[in-house]
Image (cartoon, rainbow, N blue to C red; front, side, top):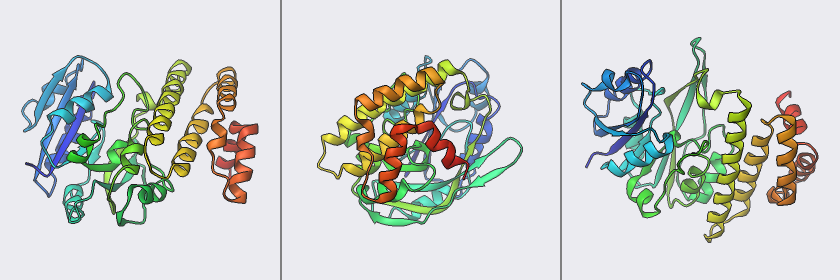
Amino acid sequence: MPKFSIIIPVYNVENYIEKCLQSVLNQSEKDYEVIVVNDGTKDNSIQKIKDYPVKIINQENKGLSAARNKGQKEATGEYLIFLDSDDYFEKDLLKELKKSLKNNPDIVRFQIQEVFGNNKIIKYEEEPFENQTGEEAFKKITKYHFVENAWCYAIKRSYYEKNNFKFKEKTLHEDFGLVPLIVIKATTVNSISYIGYNYFQRQNSIMNSNDQEKTKKKVNDFYEHYNYLLKEIEKTTLEKDYFKSFIANSLILKITELGKKDYKKYKKILLKEKIFDNILTNTTTRKIKKLFLKISPKLFYRLKNNK
């Protein structure tokens, strides 16, 4: 059994996939398998990688979630890592992750840097920790920039399969609909300080699109994920208030991306369903924030971002 299964969905990334794969093959730690899921790509991506030592699985185009789910089913490694095909690893990522497996954690988090086309790099650094419960880790992680992105974590396959985790298919923001649960339900979580993942910012990517119809799709899917997370956390005996506050804040922030008409519509829905009531008010600052958000989420975040 390899230590790591690296799952790479591929769809129309012929300009990026070789750099992505090469970053895996150049790893200083070699105990891994690579599973490439061809999600019905229409370009030359698969032709470019057919001679690489990877397992290629073909399926018709079903989207990122379905590709990840397919790759996970084929994985045989002890830990799963989801790598987007336009991103790439730093050479010692797997080596540093392996060092953090001595306590047999369900999850190990690693650090990210954003890479832009003009060679600009933004590094994100966090305080490392180990032997935290999922509830403890969740509270630590949510203080930082990337929380629900699946590519921030190495996840023990047996833990993943025991909980029957799956990315919801035919949706956007699929990470938000699953990863918070993966974190909070874990028995043991570690986080290492190594910045091992390069998150490449493509101007024409789905998540960077400014198209309002796509934005409405994103918000609709985000709302669906929110309701799923709320239902799932209620099934557990875990501490719920912080989790519910996090997902409520995330949804409230998300609706601010909408145009005026759709934003007002969604704000009414959130007020009617008392989603604002899930925001924590255990400090004066949080009480003020909740009041401000109920009045105008857009104004709140505009002022916050202009500080």
